[in-house]
Image (cartoon, rainbow, N blue to C red):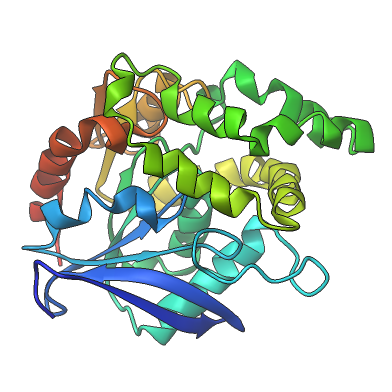
Length: 289
């Protein structure tokens, strides 16, 4: 595989057709990139060329996101356990034995489930606004936390703004000092997929299930303490959803963790991909293989 080419594939994992991007020499150390809400592997479009000369990159779209299959809620229950189960099948199908993970937003609870199940496979962790600590949850989680406490139709309907174009653009633009850096195809593509039939209900199911990620935070933290994975946190410091204390908290369990902040919001790669890419390259170069 040519290092400067990005290839686009689909494979069946857990009975679901999963789309993924692949780049870099296949014999090089592997980095698995796991996106978050409301995006897809498209969020890595500018990062992949920075890393692909030296690393083998695999970036899947989670079930229900991007170009991956979105099975009906009648045949697939949208929980983070099931997202992780599908990604476990994905890495098994690709026969990935050793790899680092890049986790962002929803990719964090998905990727950390993989780490819990496959500690021997994980060479390192890059967390870009990928939370694992309660102090990282911002006040914008308030309506979602209310839904967790009272699973009512009223509280579910109150969250429908999250799946609108206004809600999507808020995630991209909040905390960004120079809005002209945000490529319009980013939030436009995300919204295209969010506007598909049943997609809103899928996303509301995942918002409801997110409480089970918070319940797993102690298990994630125990994994960090036990295995001491090398970890780099690269964090947009004006993210309204995942606050800087969530990044700093990694040092509590992994004292040697490196934490770097960038003056931007949730989608830090949209505005700071060159800076973050350089920091990731330095980190990857330091990992045991």
